[in-house]
Length: 114
Image (cartoon, rainbow, N blue to C red; front, side, top):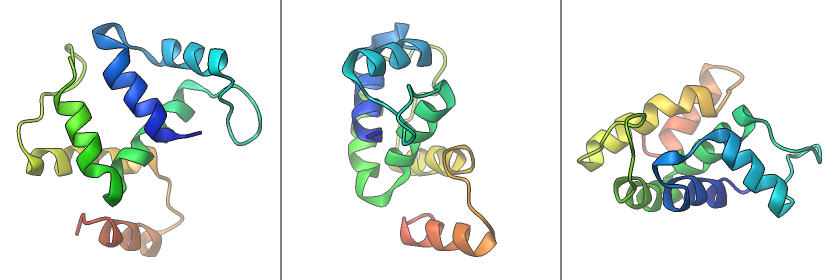
């Protein structure tokens, strides 16, 4: 699944009535499947979106999308780049499951978190 497409659709197109269920229906209508060829689960969608956003090469674009979105009451408003990086740092644990401390440390370092 392309996390960038999902992130953009979720934050740019869906407005404040967004939900993972609606994103799942969007995926079904577009023929977007998970790596096993099945419709994506809500957790799979969440992970794909944030895996895209937390990568160094996508952080700025994701920041621009997020901060220009109507967030509603679920998502915290982000005012600065520093707040964004801290917010993304919190998403790493749920979006990425690392095998051990070495892999996590390498990911954090290579993506500008440490």
